[in-house]
Image (cartoon, rainbow, N blue to C red; front, top):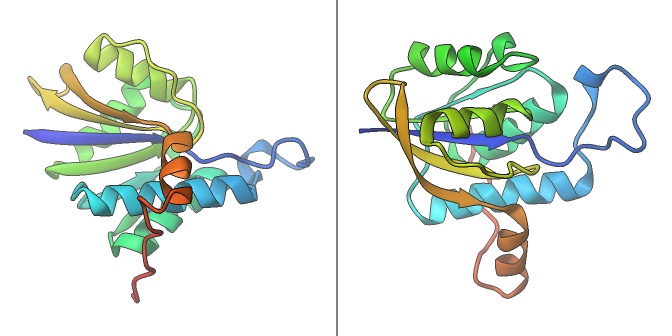
Length: 168
């Protein structure tokens, strides 16, 4: 069974950014949240075979933090910036690996989860949904929804260590 890991990009620097939306960077909290997700995913053995990300700076930076920790290949796909559910599912279909991580944006991420699982979830920044895909890309089962605040608490309490950087 294929597992889709769907992640909304980490927290961006919206308040201080005056440039084009596509070029908005992550803020410090976002960089830390992405590193926490990377550490947790590695610790529980959920590292994907491939990461596909929106080319928007905030999404790409989130993805690069993850792949640096895991040594996983990264591809950028323009369909994930401003695209809808059909675009995300087309990206998933184009990469038939057993475990794929897609880094994207709202409201598309929560809509994909709802379309596949029927669940109404809050995909806050750096939230990760793990979905087992059934019947191709028409249906899935939500296996977990990981919120970054939970990981931040685990790291502060010493339960979770930051993922070490891997050499390329």
